[in-house]
Length: 260
Figure 1 (cartoon, rainbow, N blue to C red):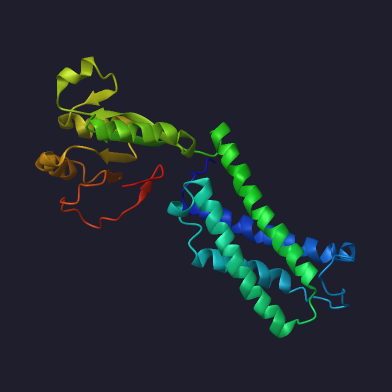
Figure 2 (figure 1 turned 45 degrees about the horizontal axis):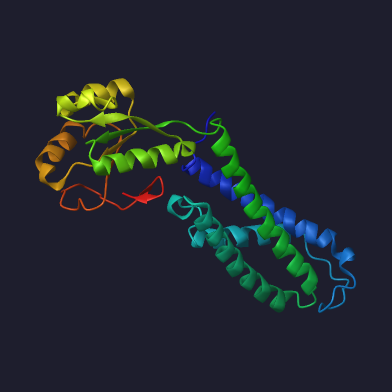
């Protein structure tokens, strides 16, 4: 079964991987404690035995903090730099909270174990995310096509087309343009029909997303199109500077790393 890059299922998978990574990091830090003798600026190792429940509490603390910082939302992870930055922020907050808990309940916990755990954990969290990005760029095994149709082959429509091409590894698949100017079909082979053909094209091509890039003076045409297609299970996305449309439940979202 294929998995879409930005979906609820992928968010759940990310949470599970973060829990496993944090639990593994904590276990490794405890197991390697005997190898930390002689590390400067750290206190001597104690005979403190951490309760097994900490293997559950610590990963849950980490994931809860990452949830609060919204790391699992698509807009936080479109770009690698944004995703890694938010992971580092989330881990930093978790580290401070965990340090406070250790100070209150386990004051004898070695600082070298603590630093080792945080270092391993951050490395694991960033490593699996990096590996996932490389994998998605090289294979389509985990990506289902998100078929996209653009209304209006204008300059802004070309920008939308370029965004789709740049983010094909996310599963975006360009289907074509809608344009009522039939004369443009000779120069633009990507035009699949006019607005009057919208219902047939939507059914035949199994469109998932419709990107509107028509100029503002085409407001009436866009409104008619939305009325004609309102019963299709698709996402309508509007390029910026098109705020005069009277649509229900309009939200600002990110599509291919750009605001729509």
